Image (cartoon, rainbow, N blue to C red):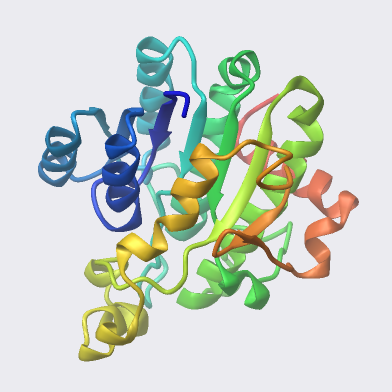
Length: 274
């Protein structure tokens, strides 16, 4: 197996950390991104990886990540966009003025991919996005991506995961002919510390005894590891969506080219990208 340079966001805990352990054991070079300095340092030290501390609730820190990745990585073979959260019952606005779930789960991914675009193209990279089956409950309101008119915690999460699938498909349309392969996956409902600190129903669920019924971080990371080591066009279809290493169905709107282009343009405008 060829040794790859792999960047993983959301790597200080959960499936990001589990994927890092497996990929390091397989001999790959890793650059890990996470918001907890202590947790990230522990994982990075354990697997012998370089690390970048950043909280995606601040887009300036996303830009810092891009600068550091470009400095550290002459080639990016794989970019795994894995950072995310389910926020609590109260709508939270970031320092950038966006609803937190939308920014951390979706806008930050869009911005990071944009800032790394030239390096990703030059590297003929695989871009992996952690989405979710929750996207089936999402909707895209191009006039209210930040949920100013109506906010429900799980609804905002589902919307962000649907947006990520549309982004993955549109990224493939935009960059596929230039050598980039984009793919999204559902990790399962994982028994990690996901959302615990944010309260709300999902936070209580993830910290309750019911957590024991969920899948492990290691099993949740399996598709991420598979896609990171896979050959695009052979092991997975670029632009596709994977569950347990197999192609999976999405909502029909994910294939809507007009919606994908409109979401892309709306998002770029929100981020001040020309």
